[in-house]
Length: 318
Image 1: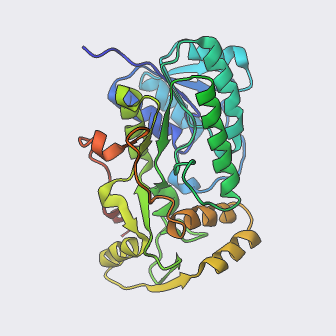
Image 2 (image 1 turned 90 degrees about the horizontal axis):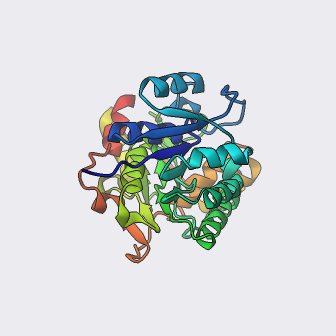
C-alpha cells in the first residue's frame, strides 16, 4: 500500500492553485489549503479573469465539502506558516506574480519546520533558467530564478514545474488582446508564426503537478510539460481554428521590432501578455533540449495522463 502524501497548497484559490487542489483531491491525497483569516478577495489587476470564474468564497466552500482541510495562515505570519507546514509532506506554492519574492518567508518556515519532503516554488510557466524574455516579464522570471537558488542553497528538496503557456492565457483568445474568445475574421501573429510553443490547460497542470509531487523520480529536478499534440507553432494553432469554423482568417504577421514598441507603449495587463507571447512565439523559449541529469518530460513519465489537446480545447468556442 502506498504511503499517503500530505499536500499543502499555498495560493489555493488562484488561477493555478485551484486546479492543483482539485487534482490532489482527485488523486486521494490528504489535501490542505492555507487561507487567510479574512478570506474575501482583495481587488487586484488580473490577466484573464474569464478563465477562472469561480469566486474565492465559492471555492473555499467547495473545498470543505470535498474534504480539503483549510488551515488559517498567511505568508506574513511566520508562526502560522510553520504550524501549517509541520502538518504535511509536500508544500506547493501557487502564489501570483506579485508574491514571488515573498517565498523567502516560505523557505524560512520550511527550514524551521524541518519535515518537508518536497517544495514546489511558484513557477508554473517557462523554465526560468532558460529564457530570453523582455520586460516586464523578465523581472518576474529573474525573481523566480532567485527563489530557485535560495531553495537550493537551503538544501530544501524541490521540484520545479515548467508548464509554459496556459490555454487560459494563450488559446482562449488565440493570443489576441482585449478579447476572451478566438477571432473569426483576422488574427495578429507575432513574428512569422513558425516557432514552436507548448500549450497546456490549467487543469492538466494541476494533474501533472500532483503526479510529480508523489514521485521520487522528480526529486530535485524540473518537470517540463511539453505535450506532443500541444507542441505547436502558432500557424498550426490558427489552422486548427480555421478548420473548426470553416473559414480562413486574415493572418497579420507583426515583426519583432513592432511588438517591442507596443510592449513599451502599453500598460498592464497588455504589456505583460505581449511579453509572454513574445517569449514563446518569437524567442522560442519553449524550444530546448532536456538534460536528463536535472530535467524530466512530463508526458514521458506519465503517459497514462489523458491530457486535453489544443484541438479539443478550442471546440468550446465553435
